[in-house]
Image (cartoon, rainbow, N blue to C red; front, side):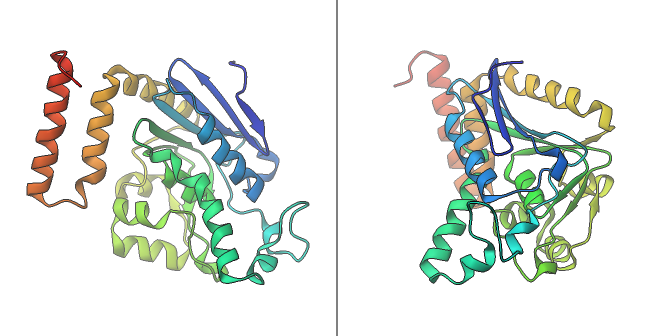
Length: 261
């Protein structure tokens, strides 16, 4: 196993052959998330080496992530972090700044120069669901269960999960999933587009490894340009997308001809 680039607060980062792996390493608590873990995830994003093209997100134990550590809702909170109840007593600006800081752990996975893949087994609840949604692709074990429980707790999903959820399953289904807090089992997740692929749990690691290798097969710049075209397609008209395609292809052809700037 490669030497860790980061190993703190339940987050392990390694890198090997163009693939970085971020592993959640607190299986005893079903990889429940804390502000310290979010800061470690943000730091992992900063530390991903420049030659990495694929980032795999996985988790130790039977659950991907059971969501937020419930200590966030207790008066005591965490050892070195304010509880959410304490956070609420601050000013609006302070509260907004804290939530924005937490969101950074979920925003770097879709950066233009990498393709991120979440390997999901067992529970992916609340913050765990949103962390899986932060990635470009999701491969799920057949026991995977997704649930957005925030609304059931009187909250809203605020860790960047609402936009990708709507983009993947549509507004009506996204509203139903969030408002009811129900579990979406692996077969439904694949049918509705939450999961790119569902496999038996024993095959999850090998399947993700094969996918990562396939993603490395094409030239890096072609993948980057294609990702940008697809990521922006939803906000462009057909004519705007045609223009973007022409510009991207022009860059690729000039590069292949050795005429790039």
